[in-house]
Length: 221
Length: 273
Image (cartoon, rainbow over all chains, first blue to last red; front, side, top):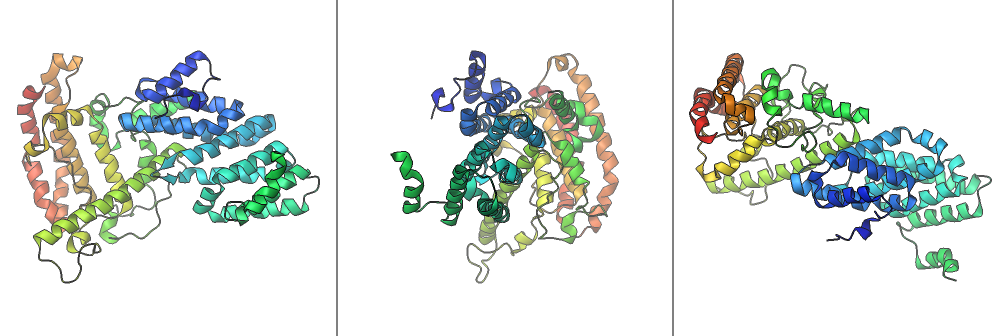
C-alpha cells in the first residue's frame, strides 16, 4: 500500500542501509533480518523523530515476512534486542537521557504497532509499565524531556495499556497525583503536563472540549 | 553480537527434541527454511525445559488422563524465556484457541448429520457431546503437539509431498497423514504417530548432491534406524490396552505399525527421487 519510503522516514540512514530497509520491506527473505532489526533499533536510540514512528516500518516488515514465509525472524530479533536494551535501561539513563527517552518512545511505539491477533503483546506490558513508572519517579519528573516523553506515551497507548492491566495504571497514576501535589521543584510546565494527563485519563482517555481549549488555546495564538 | 550468534547456534542444535538422537542430521539438512528463515522452530530449548516443567504430571502420564478439561491458568512458564519466544508462545496459544473453536464447530456439524439429532441441543451447542468429551482440550498438550506437527511440516519433504500428491489421491496407510491433535491419545501413542508420520514424509525428501551419489546407502541407513526405533518403542503397545481412552487408537496404531511404512517407502523412493 505505502511503497513510498518517505512514510518510513528512512532518509536519515546512509544509502546502503536505505537499500537494506527498502529490500526488507519488499522481500524480507532476501536480507539478513537480524541486521535489519539492529539497524532500526540503533537508529531509534539515536533519533527521537525516528523512534516515534519506527513501529510502522517494523509492522510492515513483520507483515511482509509473515506473508512471505510465515516466519517471524525479524520480530524475534527485534523483541530480543529490545529486551537486551531493557535490561540495561538504568545505565542507559545514566549515560544519556536522550537515548533513554528514545528507548521508551520506541518500545511504546512497538507496543502500539505490533499486535498478536489484534491484541497487544503481553510480553511487553510489564516492561512498558516499568519504563513509564520509572519516568514518573521524582528524579525523572525534574527533567522536562522525561515528563514530555511520559505524557506523550500515555496519550498514545494509555488506554490500551489500561485495558490489559489496569492495576499498574492505577499505580502509575497514584504516583503522578502525588507528584503533582507534593513534589517540590517541579517546573510549572511539568505540572501543566501532569495535570493534563490526569484530566485526560479521568475523562476516559480524552479531553473535554473545554479542557482542550484550556490546554491548547495558547498554542493557537 | 556474539551472544546472538551463540543463541542461534543453540537453536539449530536443539531444534529436534522429538526426533531423538539418530534423526537429527537428516532433519536439519532438509529444513525448509534455514536458520535465518525458520518459522517458530527456534526456541526449542525453552520448549523442552518447559515440557520437563513442574506442571506436567509427575507420573509421566498425559495430563488429559486426569484432568480432561484443565481449568488451570495458562502456563506462564515463559518467565525465563526471551520476549521473542514469549510472543511466539502467545501467538501460538491464540491461534490454538481459534483452531479449537473451528474443530468444535466441525465435529458438532458432522455429529448432527451422522447421529440422530439430540433432543434440544440445537446448533451452536456446547462441547458436551460425546465427541466433545473425546477431544483433547489441554492447552499445554495441544501446543506441544502443534509444535511437533510444525516441525514435520517445516520440511522440504512436506512441501514436495503436498504438491505431488493432491489430497484426494492420498490413501490411508500408504501416504502420510498428519495426526489429529484434537483426539485423545496417550503421550506414547501420540509420539509414535508423529514419528511414523515423519518417517513416511522422508520418502519425499529432495535429492541433494551427496544423495545423488549414495541414494541407496542413505535409504538403507534410514530404514534401519527407523525399524530400530519402532521396535524399541513397541513394547509400550501393551500399555495402550490398559489405557482407558486410547482403545480407539489402538487399532490405528497397530495398523500403522504393521503396515510397515518403511517397506512402502523403499519401493516408492526410486520413483520420487
